[in-house]
Amino acid sequence: MSKSMNQQILLKSYPTGEPKASDFALVETVIPEPGEGEILNRTIYLSLDPYMRGRMSDRASYATPAALGKVMVGSTVSQVLKSNHPQFSVGEFVLGYDGWQAYGISQGETLRKLDPKQLPISYALGITGMPGMTAYFALLDIGKPKAGETVVVSAASGAVGAVVGQIAKIKGCRAVGIAGSDEKCDNVVQELGFDACINRKTQDLNSALKAACPNGIDVYVDHTAGAILEAVLQQINLGARIPLVGLISQYNAETPPPGPNLMPLLIKRALIKGFLVGDYQERHAEFIHDVSQWLQAGKLKYKEDVVKGLENAPTAFIGLLQGKNFGKLIVQVGDDPTKK
Image 1 (tube, rainbow, N blue to C red):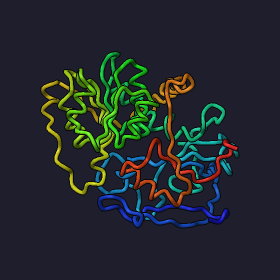
Image 2: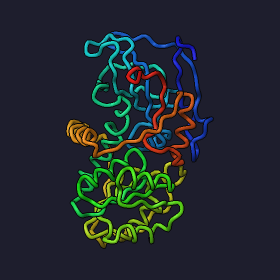
Image 3: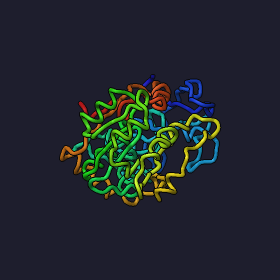
């Protein structure tokens, strides 16, 4: 790519079922110039997240669909290259929403400054960003775990699930993960401190959950729905709470799959509640305060899965939906001067 050009990945077509490389288009355009009150950002890291699959559709949802023929949406960590904005200076690092491109223009309203002396700037896309914030509020605000209770989380080695289990341990709970490989399960238990982890691909979910949760399940942080939710419902305790964070098993479905038997929710008077992290923006400082302290104290561990090159974003995203990533998936788009 020429340094004088802006590399972009456009959403070419809405995927039918699983996304394909042909649903995206790689183009080069002239690097834009910031107008009055605007900032030109150079992308360093791009976040890839499961929610993006929901934006690649014109079906009614909680968010506006990504526009065809436009830069695919996504959170970014960038460095200010040019600024006509009084609150942002050249050289500063910012968290923004410039999408799948090497350079982006911002008016500054949604930018948040980052201090590379406190934490690695890429963390703002993960553990101190939207995924970490999701884990924090979904577990603590909806799950309301109490010491001694059992917390189960699916996609346990992912950006959200890994944090959920560690916070559950901080709160004195038994943490049980569900993941897609022995390697991921070993990491969740041996490195992150979960009490147990179930391989959803090789173990029978019902018997494995009974063994891992001998006292039943009090909180289940759900990222998948489908068969995992159905198995969990058979083990929930009286008054169980289920934050519904994601529906990974359904994202590529063209028609809604048959739902699980929800009768246990009635019998056990359990709570299942949908969760959107955007509802908690006003409490961002509370989240940052606690998570930063836990990171600095070594109570939270964090793993990144870094793919280099914007051109590899579509393939990496397709792999994300297939569970191929290990940790928070980000794309390194440009040089990171904080690591030199």
